[in-house]
Length: 233
Image (tube, rainbow, N blue to C red; front, side, top):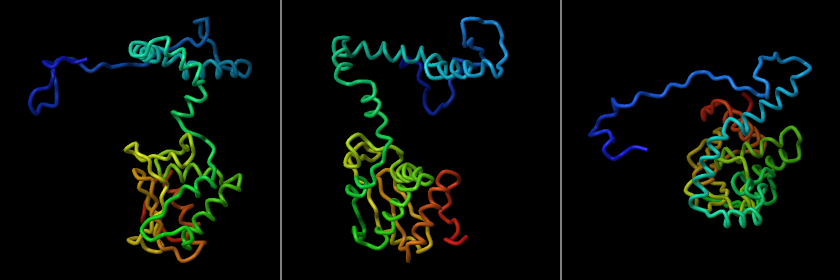
């Protein structure tokens, strides 16, 4: 916490007072015994278990306790107890993180269309045909959350389904397919994650649409380049 008097004056960007805190390497005992023990085939499972517990819980124990102290200062314990009885941890996790399962029927049902696209437009039909093909393939079903994240910024569906989808400003905004009138027939789709919108180029056939969607997700996870090659590159 800084006092008002400690604020950097004028256009200065450096404060000569406090030195930067340097944190070096540290060792943590994962068991009750602080003696060194080599990991081998016999104890490796126990090592992984203890390391996982430390990374998920022990390493952030002080930070979590600080958050709990702050929460108790603004929310009385009686209210917290009532909330715990009404909202189990699994439901709270869903509210915070969303749902992992993606229902394509619900997705399509709550999709909006813009810039002249309609539900029965050819490119829209090809889009949903591609998405449904992914949903029925064990190898390609992972592309559903990848597509959702590409367009909305999140790989998970909000509680309540796609009807509860929101943009970056917190307001509700449906998943939207828009006609990319500024794009060429061989362009990749363009996403506007802040408004959950995907601009689809005027593809001329299903094969091109499918290939470009696949290519978009591949490049979107690596080094996205909207000028990437054509369908048969």
